[in-house]
Length: 398
Image (cartoon, rainbow, N blue to C red):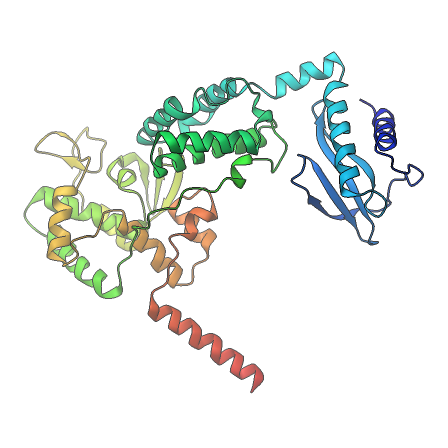
C-alpha cells in the first residue's frame, strides 16, 4: 500500500466520522515524544516541539513498519481518532496485495511453529535441568495455548485469559514460570522481527505474589559459617572436604549449585570459568584470588573431566545436601539453604556499592529486574547511607 493510498484512506475515514479534513498537513520537524494509547494497538499521540499534538497509527504493512498521521488532537476528538485508527488498521490489513500477504505470512509464523523454532534456536543455551523444566511447562501449558493464532496476533486479552486458566490448573509459582517462559518467547519474536517492538502483552499481566523466602548472611553469620567450612575443607574426610569446597565456591562466586557441581576442568581458564550450560545460557564467571585458591586444592584424577568427583561411587558429585545440613547446624544456622549463599553474594555486593548491572553480570541474570530482588541492605548499611546523605545535605545548606 502506497503513502498516497494510505492518505486517501485517512481522508475517507475522517469524512465518515464527520471530521473536518481541511487541516490535513504533515507537521515539520522531528517528533519529540509519542504517547501510545491502550485503546487500539499501534494508536497514539505524537508530541512535537512546537506544542502540536497529532494522532498517529503505527503498524506493520508489507513487512515494514509504517506510521500514518491521522490529524491534530486540537481538531479530532479522542473518539473520532479512535474510530479513524480502527478503520485505517482494518484497511491496511485487508488492503495488502498478495505478494505483501505472502511476505507477512513468512515473517510471522503461527504460534505452534514459532514454539518449535524457539526450542530449535534458543533451547540449546539452557542447562539440561532448565531444558527439562521448560519442556515440561511447554507440554503442560504452552503447546496448545494459542494454536489458532499467528505469533504477531497475540494480545493482552489472549494472554490474560490464558494466564487465568493456567492459575486454575496449577499453583501460583508454576503459573509465574509459565508466564515468564511465554514472555521470553514473545521478546524473541520482537527481536527476530516477527512482532512490533515493545508489544509483548505479558508486560501488562500481573504475576502472582511471590513467597519471599530468600535471606542473606550477616557479617557475624558469615564468620561462623566460614569457620565451619574452613575446618571441613582441612579435615580428613575426603567427600566432606570436597562438599565444603563446593559450598565455599558458591559463596565466593554467587554461582548456582548446578553450575559449580557441573564444572569440568576444561571450563576453568586461570581467573575465569566459562560456563557451558548456565541457567540463562553460556556465560563467564570471574574468580577472585580466594576462589582460585580453593580450586587449586581440589584433587584431579586421570581421565576424569569433572572438578567435583565422588570417588567412592565413581561418579560426579550431584548434591551436597547431607554435608550441608551438618555445616549449617554446626554454624547455628538451621534454616539456611544452599541457594541463600548466592543471595548472600549478591546482597554483600550491593552493600559494597556495586551497581545493579554489575551485580547482574556477576550473577548471570538476563534482566535488571531479576537482580533487584537480591539487592537488599542490612540495617547497618542503611544507617551509614542515611548518615552520609544527611552530612552532605547539611554541608550544602550550612
